[in-house]
Image (tube, rainbow, N blue to C red; front, side, top):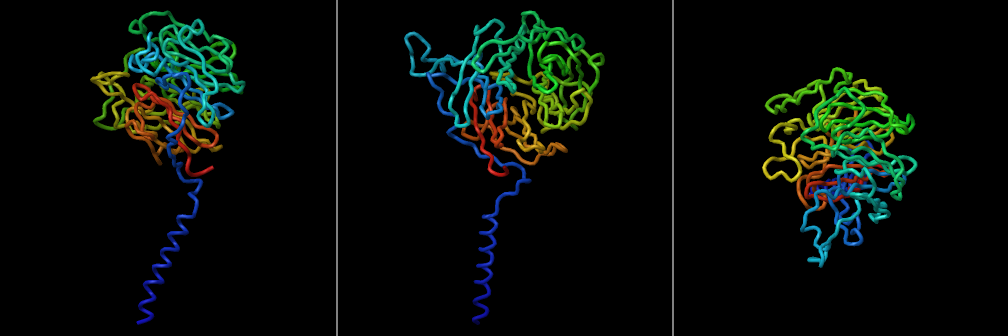
Amino acid sequence: MTKNRKTPLARWIAVCALLALGAALPVRAQDPPIYKVDPFWPKPLPNKWSMQQIVDIYVDKDDHIWVLNRQSDARPDELGAATKPPRSECCVLGPEVLEFDADGNVLKAWGGPNYVPGWPGRLQTLGVDRQGNVWISGTTPGDSIIKFNSDGKFLWDFGHRGPKIPAAQVKQDNQQTAIFPPGIGAFDFDEDAREVFISDGFLNKRILVYDMDTGVYKRGWGGHGIPLSEIDNDATPPYDTSGPPPDQKQFAPALHCAHISNDGLVYVCERGSDRIQVFTKQGKFVTSFFVHPSTQSRGPKCGGIWSTTDPPCGTVYNLTLSHDPQQKYILVADGTNNMVWILDRKDGKVVGSFGGNGRYAGQLHWIDAIAIDTKGNVYTGEVEDGKRIQKFLLQNGK
């Protein structure tokens, strides 16, 4: 009887010991990354500034976080302190370029409409080079890329501007490389080669490469690496969700990002096909990954910002690569499902996710921007009426 009473107790003690040991073991570094939101980041903006649409984020070499605080969709109820006399305690429009430190303090802030000639009418992308210079693009006809030092001093205009005409009058022309009639969407640098890669895909269907210092055109390609001469100038057919995702050869606008990995591959966000296409820097097609392809990605029922009738479409709004030297994972900002999908970079399989539609800390509403720092922490930016930046702390790995 004594033996029988002790056996269950001994087993119970052994199980508890194993559970305690398992809880004490660290998560393996090779496991997919896990994130937890920091609800107190960033600190409140100074000077009664309102936070508007966070359309892009860039983390520089010092782990400072630069954001585009796009003013063009500010609502009257957000600017009560700007009236004369003020009708409410807060707020006023703030600068459109903000630099934060890792603790969420604003370090520098500058820029906005009429700040300099050529300031974008509708901000889209921001990048910071090794020298700390800030590059900004916009997507209004007549916009281009302009370059500043970190204090906001104007340095250079990339040029290649199209005419300032109504956007509805801009037509596709995937063969000419002299101008960008609809403005410039996304871009990234190859600073060793002194090249800038531009995803000209809000209307057109191509990637173009220019000299980073002179603006001289060097090369370009379309979907699956086809030459510019083979890109059609026709409207893209609607996306059919009734069967397998349409693996069309041509790019499908919008091309919402272009990012270069440590091993020299170019990752293109093909939001119009729920797809990432991967190329060498010379334009040779390497592979592609569909991301949640059951989501409608394009067509007549795809709404834009502030649409009251039609929802957004597409899944690959932006992406960032994990902070480990091998960049094992791709983190995809999906602005329709309001998720960050974590993909294995080798095969594109989803291995994790975080987010979900909502306004609470850790949820997302129309995520449009994503970036990562050297510690693996992730920063997300929201547009439409989400209008915030959030920080997600890496919980495992180094």
